[in-house]
Length: 150
Image (cartoon, rainbow, N blue to C red; front, side, top):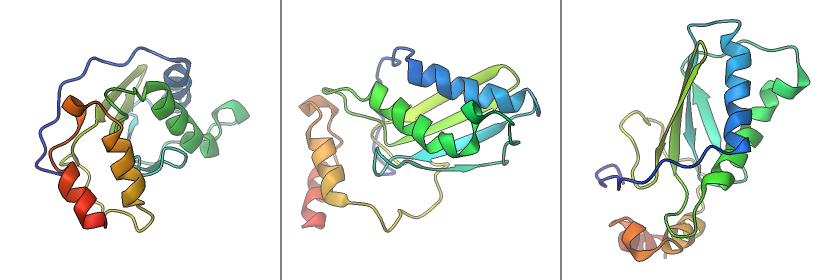
């Protein structure tokens, strides 16, 4: 999965979910402008996992509560998942000052993801998600992933 070539895709349209995630990040960079990075892995779209390079500050507003981040990331994934191209597997969100940049990886495990795959990975569900993509959007490792999951 690390050696897979990432297929170029058009940038997703800006959604309400993306605007809410950007607001969450900006509420924190208003306090600490130097910012932070969120690294996201989506093994299960209902419960994305993430980690920070630097823990962002707390915000005294329930709309921007820290515990909302997983929900916001899941909503972003759902808003951007496409029947033909599928949904991303990894994302990196860089927030600094008023700038929030979101990069997505649909086909490969990016170099910056150095954590092992989590025990909760449901390989069968991942295989189904990848097979549901159009043929030109399916990664080359899909058959191997399918046979190793059996």
